[in-house]
Length: 261
Image 1 (cartoon, rainbow, N blue to C red):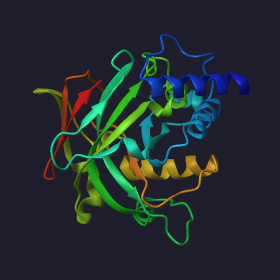
Image 2 (cartoon, rainbow, N blue to C red):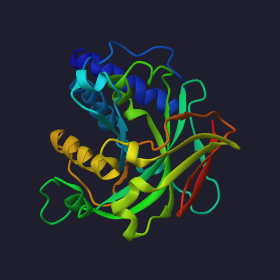
Image 3 (cartoon, rainbow, N blue to C red):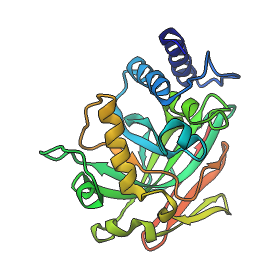
Image 4 (cartoon, rainbow, N blue to C red):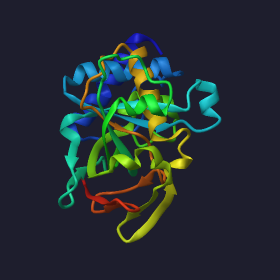
């Protein structure tokens, strides 16, 4: 992939997202490694000129994680796609002819400390967080093959993010034990996933450490108040317009939204 090809891909994704139209095929040459993929993502961010309200973190599965040298990926969440789900069921639009899915996630709000040395363990990472909530990430792209084509393609289009639903606040005394909280995801009345965050590599706090390193390597200035969507707890569950997506976090509460076109 050349720089020109990366710009073409970024422009195509931004235009498709602006107009709400699907892309039948990937626009240009697919990125071959994460450096190329993040280059496309960074160009798209510059073209959007929208405020970033947070970042999503996703998992790169084996064997691709070994080939790419990373077990996680990142993508921007624009501020105007982050909604409050504590009262009612907000409407979240997806690309009906593209890819659309929902994920139950722990959401951690970034607080950049006065001494911003990157954290090395969970104890230090907690110093970078001032709030934790339950939530739902909406993963949607105008390109239907975004997940099937691998992590580099996923990264190149916003990490496959299309929105975030903020649920209830997690009490501070539970932050050290997020991995023990049972999570259940439903599409309509159908249970589509059950798990705990203990299955998520080194957990939500590990996702924060990954993101901080990723952004530092890309020379993106860290900002307090950003939400970090730390990874799908029960999996990636496909949805379509008209569906109701809900996630129940044991002992904390439930968050839900309606999927729109």
